Length: 226
Image (cartoon, rainbow, N blue to C red; front, side, top):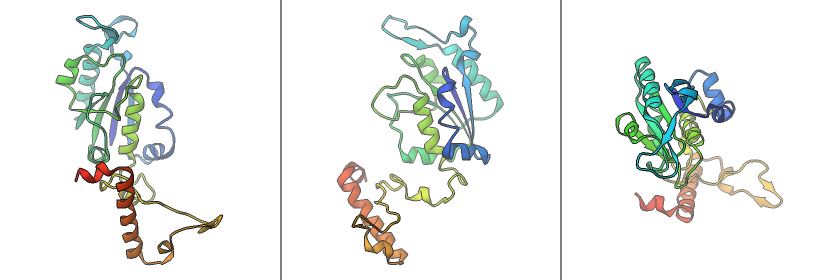
């Protein structure tokens, strides 16, 4: 899988993709992440990529030309399954979206800044818009890193135990059950006896029951959506 990220601050994306599972995914050749500095593709002097809004108003807007030039260039090199724009007014990102995107081959992610991007780019280039929450960040880079991490960890071969992702929260619209490790008795706090019974069916049934109970208590809306 290849993900091209368009940004005006590529430095913000260096650390998130240089450690843990994203580094493993890249090292194993399972995920290629390429960041593009938009300022390197603008026809304007001094790397200008933003301008004032037509009609007035506070805040600058990312100009259409630099984005169109770079996207056109990328699309001549390979076919992209999605051109994603990270924006607070997009549909909320969830596990189902991550699962769907993990099946794609090539993706472009546009990181917005200032008051956002010229809407003509959204109309004519963007195929999917994503928000990671109902709040505003300084730019789309951190949001893009969240999406890439959530998608990249699902690629076959990234996790040492590939079945692990199947039991993540939200995979089946349920929160994950509680988990325990050694020692079985810590300060008199013991783990549920069923986890020591050695019967996988009983353990799976307990975990499913706990997932439902935890979801009812903490995120009942997930059950109501069914």
